[in-house]
Amino acid sequence: MNELLAAFRYTTNNWAQIEASTQCGCCHCVALFRPDEIVGWTGLTMENMNDAEAVSQQTAMCPRCGSEAVLGDGCGFAINANFLARMNEAWFQRTMIHRPAARK
Ligand SMILES: [Zn+2]
Image (cartoon, rainbow, N blue to C red; front, top):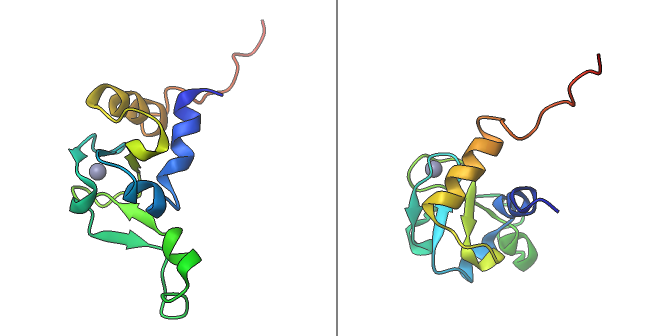
């Protein structure tokens, strides 16, 4: 699988992966930060906040821009400026996903 596609699924329900990371980054604003800088998470409600599985499936929000586009190196990819720039190009500038050119 394309590594950018493989990495993108780690931007959601990634609480456990972020907890296992030492370096995190945002695919939207391309900021690098430490996991303990992340203060915002989505996915918990009053109903499931004591559910351990729900807790482990929270989605990190970027401490810089608020996007749910955070990756941690716990997912197996090296999180650095170059990788984040490629993720940003692929997912936010949509340069990777396009229809095949029509045959002439
Ligand atoms: Zn960001």
